[in-house]
Image (cartoon, rainbow, N blue to C red; front, side, top):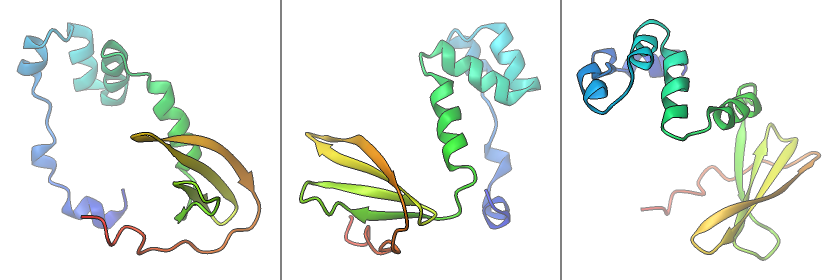
Length: 122
């Protein structure tokens, strides 16, 4: 988050409902970690819920130093798109039924994306 987003963030609403967590069967140590070391608590809770936190860590590692992400429609003729990171790395995705699949990446110099690509989305 940047400073502007932090100004608008309502920290009063960002609270854990520990009673609800207890009633939901979340164990004592996970609730304790959520209070004392929240990031460790979230990792432990996500593992208990069947979510692999390593996937989020890898995504964070990929995007944490990226300054610009461009979204570009696929030029291959298939329904898909490219995510272009800092004008130098393109991640390709194509439509497979009701979802998109990752199709690989390329490195090189890429043009600017179109910032109005989602303007027609309702």
